[in-house]
Image (cartoon, rainbow, N blue to C red; front, side):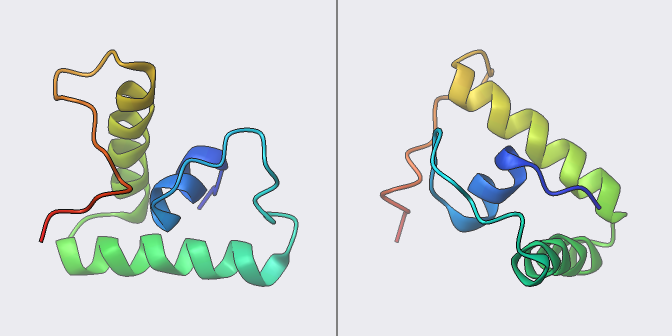
Length: 78
């Protein structure tokens, strides 16, 4: 499981831009990896598949190149 800046931002629901994400912390990295593994388990998918799909959708949305409208993650639906 690789937790990069996009995986982190998606998991915490906030774009961090150039700010530090604390991924040098083994505990923070492990927690985020666990979250992706848990999501995969709940979806019945491989963790690598969940990470790949979320990475593509997230990077397309922040680049404005996705086929879906940009998601405002600061205002979640009720």
